[in-house]
Length: 193
Length: 387
Image (cartoon, each protein chain N blue to C red):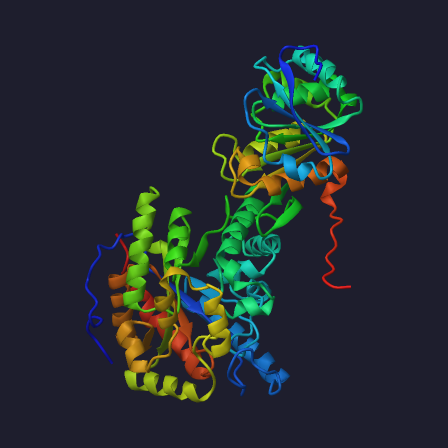
């Protein structure tokens, strides 16, 4: 990526379709959810540096992403990058089609103050075996963000994307496509025609 | 009638004292008419009138049990057989909330791997609300034949059970709508109404007859239910449960352990034995799974039984009345004899809740058995288990 930032780097690109950006810290392997998502999406794994999440960092990220994703993109972030993704949705809502936050840490004071204004469709995922960010932590996101769904991933920790990649990718794939409507299944229950 | 200790059973444990021993009455709600054997059982000889009378009689027995002092009345879930007319125990429990005014109503179970766990959570919460918090939530895998009922693969029984239980607990405790991305279950939004009266949720019991189940119960601080069992088998199950619980950092009390036992009490030993012996002429009383050997073989080959396969199959095998009494899978006799038999179960197993499977198709003798337990056995049980 020809990004105007030393902190931000395109690590990997896979698939075709609507754009999905996975934000992750530098030096991590490409997520195991990428192959499944790449069937329906153009999946861009973007490394972000160690800068603290803030409105300024979000502006910097938005400028970098604009070089490769001109249209609004689905944004997926893990524990380390979730605050930055939320700031991106707060500062540049037109750049973010939907948010998927995997085991996000509790909202800090600044984000709590801003949360009510983040209208972006958001899915927060918590693992049922995650001691650091247990499912009960999801309640705060549901209450703070006006357009937030909460999903518990069974038998998984905060590393759910590596432990249960198919389950996590399936939920994100559907949510990023259908956003709020994803609570109504479109999967057929018919066994035989 | 044996009066001493069980044969070959060492007195091996120090009882962990807790609340007074509890008496539960399990009424299978058996169809009291003529029916074929096997499983599933043909409906060809089914009588609507007999079924109505069978259910009405069971309701009377539950009501009487409540009046004479039983701590719990219990139900089970069985399908496709006259052995039990409660394929959905939640339905009859709903009716029982109107006649059982004091005792707790224990549903042992719901067979959660073959059901919709959100529906189970909702129904338990409804019943808990209707009783003001008198529901005991049993969650079982069910007997192997039940997997045929709703076309569920028995090989996936344990995985479905463990996940379903977590969904139910989460549905009871999480106040914000949530979705679930499981292995066997997927929901996009769960937010049940009504919610349980008991907080954080009703007491949960599960079957601990297999080693895997006992270990799971211990790791998750769930009460242990032992049915179709005997004292030597139950001792092993309880020992494992207590050991794994200790590893998990807690100590079960006797009040965490249910021992279900076939029970009939008469005025004398001879009366009780005579009355119960006549029941063998009426209908099948053994394992539903073993009633169909082809089915049992198919379930076995699917891997249902787990690592104690031989033990699990052996405990389902039919035995003579005398042998059943000696190994503690049946208590029968006068009140005095039954008190001794229950005391032995309590002492040898460390179970604090005796769930008496009443012979519910003996008419007045069944009612008298329940009365005698209330008058003479329960007061004795109250003296056991107290610190």
